[in-house]
Structure formats: C-alpha cells, structure tokens
Amino acid sequence: MERILVVGGNGQLGHCLQKLAPKYHNQYDFNFTGSDVLNITDKAQIEKEFEEYQPDFVINASAYTAVDLAEKEEEKAFAVNAYGVANLAEVSKEHNAILIHVSTDYVFDGETNLSYSEDDFTNPIGVYGASKRKGEELALERNPETVILRTSWLYSEFNKNFVKTMLHLFNIKDELGIVGDQYGQPTNANDLAEAIMEIIEAKNKTFGIYHFSNYPETTWFDFASKIKEFSDSSVLLKSITTAEFPTPAKRPKRSTMSLDKIEKDYQIELKHWENSLQDCVEILKLTNA
Ligand SMILES: NC(=O)C1=CN([C@@H]2O[C@H](COP(=O)(O)OP(=O)(O)OC[C@H]3O[C@@H](n4cnc5c(N)ncnc54)[C@H](OP(=O)(O)O)[C@@H]3O)[C@@H](O)[C@H]2O)C=CC1
Ligand SMILES: Cc1cn([C@H]2C[C@H](O)[C@@H](COP(=O)(O)OP(=O)(O)O[C@H]3O[C@@H](C)C(=O)[C@@H](O)[C@H]3O)O2)c(=O)[nH]c1=O
Image 1: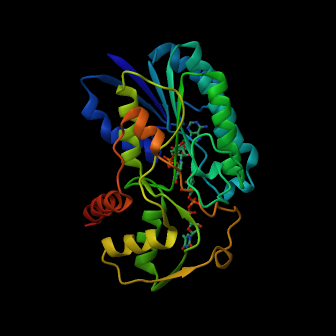
Image 2: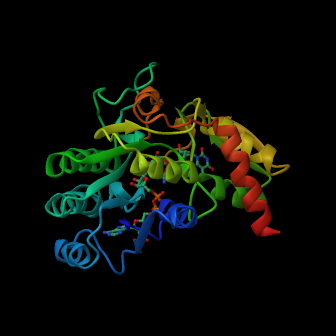
C-alpha cells in the first residue's frame, strides 16, 4: 500500500484531508503529523520521519498563514513558507517521494483585469505572498517531482477562516463593512483536499505549478453577502473600499486565477463557489445547533 505523509495535519487543509482519508483506506496509508511532531524548519525531524515512515507522497498542508502578522514577522514567515518547504523538498527528493505543495493567489500583485495563468509574472505585494513565492521556487528547484497547487480564499468548517469569522461577527454585530473592491475566488478546503487526492491517484502525473480554486470570481463583499443569505442572518452588510478598511498587509485587488491547466491535465471537476459555500454553511449550522 502506498504511504502518504501529511505535514501540517492539524491545520484547516490538514483537517479536510483527515476527513477524506477514510474514503481511501483501501488504497493508501496516511500519516498525519502536526507541528509538535514534525516542524518543517527542522530538517533532522523531517529526515527522521521519512526514515521511519518511507512515504511515497508528501502533502505539505503546513504554512505560516497570518497575512497581517507576517508584515512584522518576516523571518518567521520565510522560515516556514520558504526554507521549511525547501527542507521538505530536499528530503522528499532524497527518498524518491512526490511532493504536493500548496501555494496562494497572493503571489500575484492583482493589478490586471485578466485571469492569471500559471506562468504569469508573480509580484507579491506582502511578506506572506513573497514567502510563499520563494517556497514555490525552492520546492521545484529541490524536488522537480513536485506539484504545486496555488489556491485562494480557503475556508471550511475547520480552524480559522473568513466564513467562520463572518458567522461570528454576524452574531455580535448589527452592521458590518466588507471590502467590495478586491476580487478573487473563494475555495472550500474540502474541494482542495479532493483535488489533491485526485492528483495522487492520477496515473500520468505532470509536475509544476497548477491553479485550483472554486469559480467564478467574486468580491469579499459578495462572498460575505452569500454567507449572510445561507446562514439566514439579519446583519446589515455594507460594501466598503480597501481604503476604508486599512490592514497592515496589502491584498491584491484582483487575484483571479485561470483554472484551465488543472482541468486539462488532471480532469479535475471544478465547482461553483456558491455551491461549495452552501455545503460549508450547512455543516456549520448543524455543528452549532
Ligand atoms: N487559508 C487560506 O485562506 C489560504 C491558504 N493557502 C495555503 O493553503 C495551505 C493550507 O492553509 P490552511 O490549512 O488554511 O492553513 P492553517 O493556518 O489552517 O494551517 C497551517 C498549519 O501549518 C502548521 N505549521 C505552521 N508552521 C509549521 C512548521 N514550521 N512545521 C510544521 N507545521 C507548521 C500549523 O500548525 P501550528 O498551528 O501548530 O503552528 C497549522 O496547523 C497553506 O499552504 C496556505 O499558504 C492558500 C490560499 C488561501
Ligand atoms: C473581518 C473583515 C475583513 N474584511 C476584509 C479584509 C480583507 O481585505 C478581506 C479578507 O480578510 P481576511 O484577513 O479574512 O483574509 P486574508 O487573510 O487576506 O485571506 C488570505 O489568506 C491567505 C492565507 C491566502 O493565501 C489568501 O488566498 C487569502 O485567503 O476582507 C472586511 O472588509 N471586513 C471585515 O469585517
């Protein structure tokens, strides 16, 4: 049976993979590690885990994801998102394991009206995006048998994310201002977990960078408005500009990514973000009931 090591197993994506794993129990053995057991900034810990477990695939679900805090913690963000990823890529290469790595739409500056394709020019405008871009480069340099999935605006029923933040704020506020001039593609992390497993299962694997998200594009305001609708909230939402919601890190104005390549190479079924959002809100309603 082939073995899959999941690094960052307690994060949002890690939890979605844990939820999905039972579906694959006849085909794959899974080993989920949290940062307490395997810290990717420590190469010796990675080596030890690889020697013991001998994985065929490594899914890197770990990252430093605090976009605003990263502006103050550049060294920490790069240690995990760039040099930690390099460690993982080097050790996976030494052990002939395929690396599935996850990156972000924030590698782009967002200053275009076209959808970004995989080989478009990157130009991160914040520390988080810059650290993730460096991680992409190092991963492919150290292990050419790496699939990088760039995704965007991830949410799920697990951990901290925009959907859960909104549901919390809807409960404690009467009115909320949400930026309506930043465009992107919200993505249910459960759909990303499924895409990762489909790539692992694919017979003819092609490596390199792929974009994966739900579609089509929307704004944070329209995203929040659908969360409101699906959760039957009576909160008053107001569309505001980026200037009216100052944050330590700049966000891309329009980071919409083209999804053609993953559809063509891996025949992955893409989902409308509203359907995937509704699934998530229904789960959250049930768990809070
Ligand atoms: N969240 C989003 O909106 C988006 C995320 N992405 C990317 O998707 C991937 C998954 O993100 P998501 O699940 O949301 O992230 P989370 O922040 O939910 O989870 C990240 C996990 O990484 C772990 N981690 C942090 N540092 C280390 C380390 N040094 N060694 C090992 N594990 C570590 C954390 O553990 P601990 O808490 O113990 O530190 C945490 O469990 C990431 O690559 C992210 O950059 C891309 C686009 C959007
Ligand atoms: C809470 C809140 C946020 N906003 C805005 C701020 C920001 O522009 C936008 C999203 O805010 P957040 O801080 O939740 O999201 P942010 O951390 O920017 O999300 C990003 O995370 C990283 C990890 C990624 O890789 C990206 O793809 C993206 O998902 O919503 C409001 O306008 N009103 C609000 O009340």
